[in-house]
Length: 221
Ligand code: G3P
Image (cartoon, rainbow, N blue to C red; front, side, top):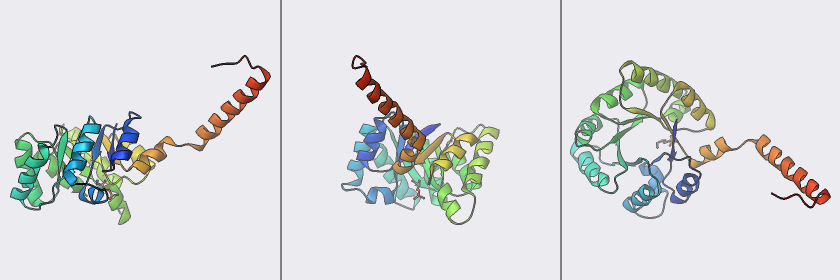
C-alpha cells in the first residue's frame, strides 16, 4: 500500500520523506491556506522534495476555468496531479484534462457511484472522503469496500486514494480491503509509528546495556 501525506507543510513532508515512508502528497485549498507563502511556490517546493505524485487542487467550478487551471498547474512540475471536485462540471473537466495527458485526482467523492463515474471520466485517482462520512454517521469504509470490488470487476486503471483519514485504524482497514493508497495527515502517520511496548522495550535494552558496561567496561558496539 502506498502512503501519501495529506499536508502542504513542507517541514512535515521533509521529516517523513526522510524516513522513506512518503510515496506522494495531497493538498487541498484548506491545507494550503494554513501555510505561509504563495500557492504555486508551495506546490513547487513539495514537488521538488517528493519523488511521487503531488496533488494540487483547482478552485474554479466551471469546465473552462478548471481546464485552464489544470493546464497551468501541470506546468509547475512533472509530478503534479490536478485535483478536480466531483461535480458535473468536474467530470467534464476531468474528461478534457485527462485527455490532454494530465493526471487527475477526483476529490470530494462520497459514494461508490461517484467513484465509478470519476473513473469513467478518466480520473487516475479516486479520493473518497471516509472520515467526513463517519462524521455524519455513515460508514465511510463501505465506499472503499465497494470501490475495491468495482475496480477489480471492471479492471479499472484508476487508483483508490483513501482520503479524510482520521486515525491509524482507518489506514489498517483500508489496507486489509486492498485499497492502493491512503493519504493521511502527519499526526496519523506519527501515531502509526508509535507503540508503548517499543519504547518500554528499548529503554530496557539500553538500561541493561548500561549496567553490563559498568560491570564489563570492555563491552563496545
Ligand atoms: O485532502 C482531502 C481530505 O483528506 C481532507 O480530509 O480531514 O479535512 O476531512 P479532512
